[in-house]
Image (tube, rainbow over all chains, first blue to last red; front, side, top):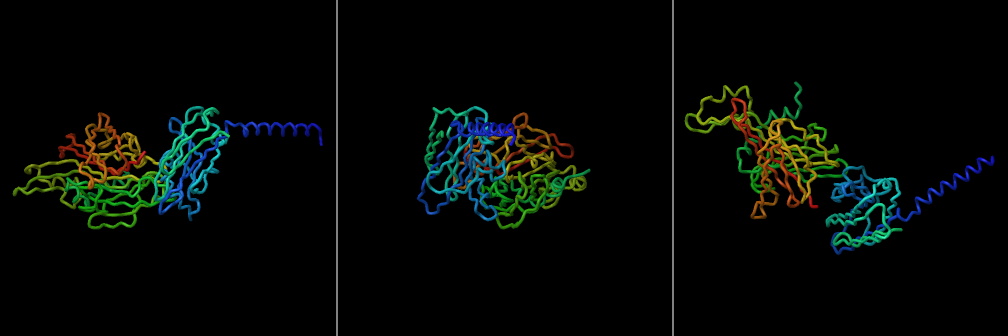
Length: 178
Length: 277
């Protein structure tokens, strides 16, 4: 192998891994949100539809996660997406579902963790400023609840962890810096 | 001249509704099962009736004749499973196109009333008949007692949206009293203020009187009617006190009619859903 080419390859490899390293390991870019879905003592329980999104002070919204019933035939589960009402108004009705990589099946009672990589393609361009992380749950034959957690971008490590508490359809919500 | 199909329909109907329209104390409405929908080609079912209580089937149905459904591109589409019962008509609509649909009735034109030689009240066009302006001179006696001639229009509408709300169906036809949304009627939330403009024959009009009442009147003593009047530019602002299904009734009248009419009147009513915050 030609020595120059080899050196170039080594340099390129080092350069690439350095770039990757800086974007992945930066703590300020990695949030984790723990969302608790309460166990409810009801006769007919269906796992709730849940949406998470970031909303700026002009109500411009950016999708973080969506849990809905993916398994119904002919994607019938989409019929009820409108019932995640605030999300539907801010994001859902404007876009094609599913959101690539952001959509998953509904989840039952317990604590669920959602990782937010702020350097991800759809989030990296968010301008600095005040935001709300909004978590909305809507349960079939049940209630609806929205929990809001104000946060600032770029993130300020001393603000974390951030916490909020739902009262009916959502339990504790905690945002941590990884 | 190319007249769009909805307009043609507008001018050729007026029959089916005359019954309900003469009973003026009542409220006429078209009530959708949902106004904001998701998923592939969702269905909405509607009730159409005339009643005192909102939204209760208790008096007479609105007939299917003259009912129009417009898709988000402005094209007229068919409704399915129509049935007229004792107190209401019902029908279904498949929202195959994303956007906002308009469903309802529109009619109007020259109207006259007078007393004949025996003091009996006469109407033109006669109940169940369509007004044809060309026949006015030969069918309405010019010097009849108490002759009143008006240019009168009426609309009963509701709107439903699949996916993102759109505005094509709100393009004015410039006939009668029409609502032009600043706030989309399928995007109303409690605590927020909606802004609508009213046009009569295509011109923004001041002094349109709006009466806004939330459904469920049967189960409360106070109607809780909200009264709003349009400003100089035809705008009305409505702040929704709470979530629910509302009936908006708007009335306009002026004396700018062209002969043989002496007054122009327009009424507009619509069913709007308001969601909780």
